[in-house]
Length: 199
Image (cartoon, rainbow, N blue to C red; front, side, top):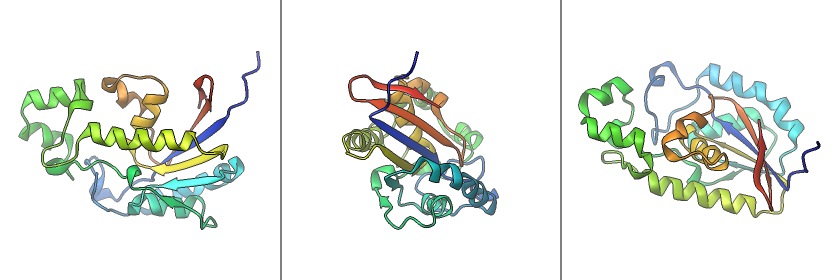
């Protein structure tokens, strides 16, 4: 049975790999560059990305997303940098490994993070609920635009929210929706049926 054509295709790309000093660490509002490996992996996405012919491209304004966009679609000069696509601020946990966070954080705070992330505010950092609200508002606006193919180049936290919402995953299962760096996720959406297919 054929699948009905989509009213909208969202092409979602997580930025490329970061320098070695950042790996395994929670990097939120730190404005770090891509590594050479990350830039190369993004360039490898370019042919597939071009074949999808996105009519509008949005990007986080953060350096690692902008550098990813430059590698993926270097000839496009019409990118739109939306602050709602920035990564969340991890506050005191910024640049720490999970083990470092675990050793300095009360167990009830860690439990809240994993069981009810939507209620979490990082110590001296951002509110997950407020971050979700920004991502949701951006997504709803994108789905209301006339263009049929829209690309988004952004961060893991943003994509976790966007993809888990599309797949109707509860907040505590959002980690299942985290895409790899320099990967492309395609979601199909129909006005009368919501998201019905993805890859």
